[in-house]
Image 1 (cartoon, rainbow, N blue to C red):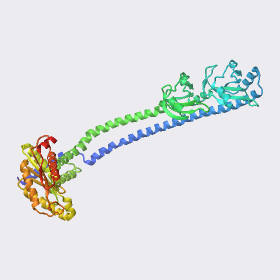
Image 2 (image 1 turned 135 degrees about the vertical axis):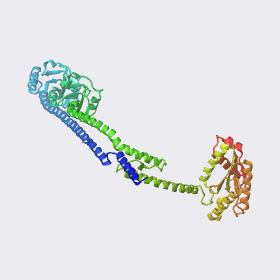
Image 3 (image 1 turned 45 degrees about the horizontal axis):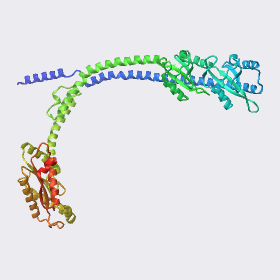
Image 4 (image 1 turned 90 degrees about the horizontal axis):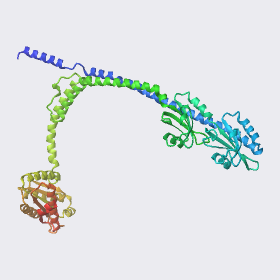
Length: 559
C-alpha cells in the first residue's frame, strides 16, 4: 500500500471516529441535569405551605383553648355572685322567717336585677318549696334531689350538676345554701336556678370565628346546651362516643376529632367549675384550612406536572446522554469480572470525559491477567502447603478429607473396594512425658516414614490424621489384603526398637484398625472412617500392639 493510500485510510478513519463521537460531552450532560435541579424550589414552596398550615392549626388550638377558658371563667364569676346572694337570703330567712306572700315578693325583688338567675326559692327542711320567684314552683317537693340532700348534709354552699328543670324542661344549674339558725339548727334551704345565658354569650363570641361551635356536656355524657348549629342534639346521650369519653376522663385538653354532629373540629374542653360538666369549643377544621389546603393542592399539582416533565427528560435524554455509555462500560467491566480479560473498552469511540475511564479499564484488565496467572501459581503452591503436615511431611487432615472423597467417588463409579487403616501410637502421651516433645516429634516422623515405606505400592495417601494418629488410604484392596498389609506395618514399627520404657514391651508399638468395603449409593466416605476408627479402638481394648479388622456386615447394619 502506497503512502497516499495509508494517509487516505487514516483520514477516513479519523472522519468515521468524529462521526461516531457523541454530540454532547459529559459537561454538557451535567448542565442538562443541573437544569432539572429546580425541583427543590417547588418542594420548598410546598414545605412553606405545609408550615403555614401547621401554624394555622396551632393558632386554632390557641383560640379554642382561650374561648373555653373564658367560658369557664364566666361560669366561675356567675357562681361567685350567686353564692354571695344566697348567703344573704339564707341569713335573712334563718333569722326572720317570712310569710309566703312576703317571701315571694322579697325574692323577686332580689333576683329582678340579676340576669343570670332564673329563679330563687326557699324550701323547708322537708323539701317542700315554701316561697319562690316562680309561683308555679311553690309546693313542689325537692327532697329527692341530690343538691337538696347535699345542702342539708354539708351545711355549706353547694352546686348541682346540670339538670333539666321540672317546670320549664330546660337545662339548669341549681345552687343551694342552707339557712342555719343561731342555735345551729336548720330552718330550710335557699335554692337558685342559674340560667345558661353565659353559654349564649360565649357562642356569640366564638361565632366570630368561621365554623365555630360551643357545647356543654354534663357529667353523664348528655348534651345540655349548645350553639345554634348543634341545638337539635341537646338532650341526647353521647357517653359511648369517643370524644365524650375523652372529655369526661380529663379536666381539660384538646382534640381534633369529629364532633357530635359528625363535623371534624379542632376542639378544646375544660371542666366547668364546681360541676362535672365539660365545656367544649370547636372550630371546623375544613374552615380553618380551606384556603391553605387549596394552595397546597395547586402546589402539589404543579409539582406532579413538573415531575412528569422531569421523568420524560430523564427517560429519553438521560438514556441517550449518560446511561447508555455507562452501561457499555459496565458491560465491559462485567466481562472482566467473568474472567474475560481479553475484552477491551477502547474498541468503542468515547467522548473525552469517558475515554480515560475506558483506557483505565483496559490497563486494569491487562494487570488483572498478569495477577491472575501469578495467583494461580501461588494458590497451587499454597494449596499444596495447606494439605501437608509440617512435622511429618505427610498429608494433614485437610488433605486426607479431600483425597478420601475423591477416591470414594471413583470406587463407587467402578464398583471396587476401598480400604482404610487407622493407626495410633500406643501410650504416646507417656512417651512425651518421659522423653520430651522433641523426642516425641522424632518418633512421629519415624513412624510416618515407616508406614509410607511399608505401604508404598498400595497406599495412595498416608496422612497424619491428628496427634499420634495416622490414616492410610488403600483403594482396590479387600479386607484380607488390607489386614495383612496392616500386620506388616505393625511389625515393621515394632522392629524399629524405639525405646519406650512406659510401654509394656519396652518399645514403641502401634494399634491398627482396618476396614475395606465396596461403596454403595446409600453410604458415605464418613462411614468408612467411622468403621476403621471403631476397629482401632477395638485393637486398643484388646491390649494394643495388634491389628483388628472391622466386620463389613456391622458396617452395613450401622448404615
